[in-house]
Image 1: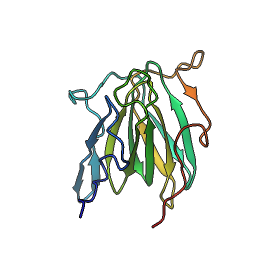
Image 2: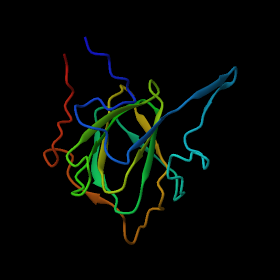
Image 3: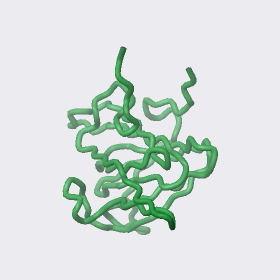
Image 4: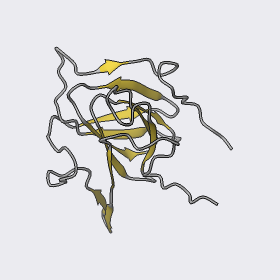
Length: 166
């Protein structure tokens, strides 16, 4: 019998995408509530260059995908609800070209994922309430010349967003 896969690990039968990094996040509770650090400048295993911080809300069942960045590296953490974050490596020179990785992020699995540039990514809200995703990208958004290259969420990359019941 095979060992169950941890949520912070890749759950598809592909190798972990080259240069992809993750970190389990820790809640620090007390009688007032809790605090959760997401990304620190002394997290030496991550690219901690600061561009901006933003939050994205996603309604239940909605897919926000696909796009990649030429320069920017994203750092995603879901702080409310749950999302399935999916990455597809289409980089021609990557040792993991063709790999698809899924991560379940959110209140039931607080995790930071650093997405390498040039890797397509997107997510689907899998919780029954709104999911709130924090991103700390390495570059500020350029309104005049966005570093964002998009594809439609369905039937453009080898990934099926439908839920797999079983």
